[in-house]
Image 1 (cartoon, rainbow, N blue to C red):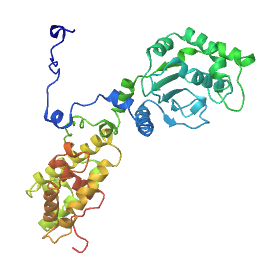
Image 2: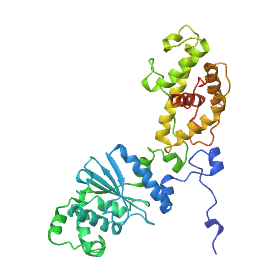
Image 3: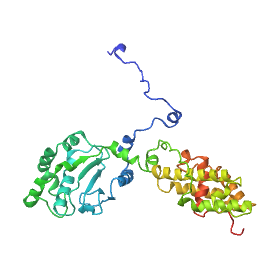
Image 4: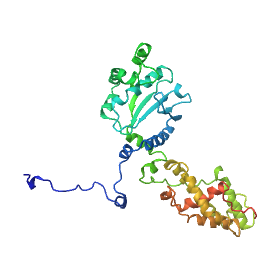
Length: 364
């Protein structure tokens, strides 16, 4: 009979992390690598597309291929406008229920060698294997030994490549093709881990939505340059006309505001515009395309009735519209955690820059 003294006391380990209200509400976050491993086929394809967009900063063009006629190409990064005739890299992205192993890649290696032999493309500079379950240890070791990888490919040619490269014919490792194979540089074959893939994905605007965890810290908005720049011209013209409407005189340029008591207001409005421009740039790098446009649209619909109401002059219309913008909650927008009052106000000037808001009514 088992003695009680032989049993282990129940003694849960002290958490290695600090608990937070978010943990109590939603539980501990699932590591991103583990999330990728349980992606559905559709989610994996979406993730690969999103991740591939992170490669655009490293290549002239990035293209995704697929289907039965992909010739061994999945995600191609081109270093020049020559496409497959110039330097390029191939990323073979596989979704399996196990870590990628040697038996999964023989036919993919065979395709790259065969189709480059057939002059469908020059051999890629690098051919990276990526897998939804990551790269198995045995394959990772083999990819680091190019000579052994070549000999193992020969051993597995008849079983995996002879009838697996194309459905229209067998591809024996003989003749001129065998000579080409013997000279082929197997050092091009390598791998990318899920951690590396996720790191690249984190530089895209899809990351926060795909994995959660909130937006990264927002950089401090820049101080407006002393002299207005060309891209500010329309909203500044609208501001000056609004000031002129209020003063009953023409305000040709910002310098004319020095003795009117409106110079400080002008500087505040420019600061707000630059806040909104900084938020636009932040959104471009952290959330999907269209998110900032949706925020602009929400602000527009939140203030347009105020803007089109009756006001004594254009200056008072602008002030009332900008003041009301700061009350628009925009809680449905993914950027809400990063939005400040100045952003909402500055978006009014972005809208004025596009003539979607006008401080001087057409009938005035």
